[in-house]
Amino acid sequence: MCLWIYRYCKKNGNLLFSSLLYYKQIDIWGSAYAVEVGITSKEQTRRIATYLAEHYDETVMNGQIRHLTRSEGAWNSLFKPCEEGTYQNGAYWATPLAWMIPVYARYSP
Image (cartoon, rainbow, N blue to C red; front, side, top):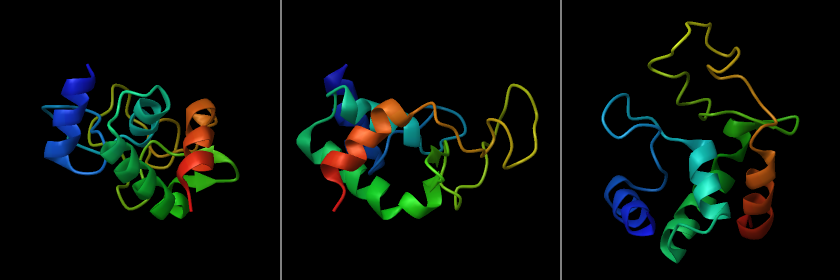
């Protein structure tokens, strides 16, 4: 798994994507989770942490975290249609705090 993550991140830039084939959009929660569980290389960890720190204002509001940055907007595809900025289509959630906070705490300037 770690080798796959390494190759995938190296090929695609700073963050992991939510899908390999369709609707390639960055995955804020998944990228931070990969760092927190230790399956990213040192370079990937640095790139992910830097991206999260640089896009903090686009992803965090009142201690809640979006799936995507505001500039990314909403998911390109949903199981259940919902308005952008609501529910799982751009809303802010506390769900990823358990793995996001340690990444921000350890790697943010």
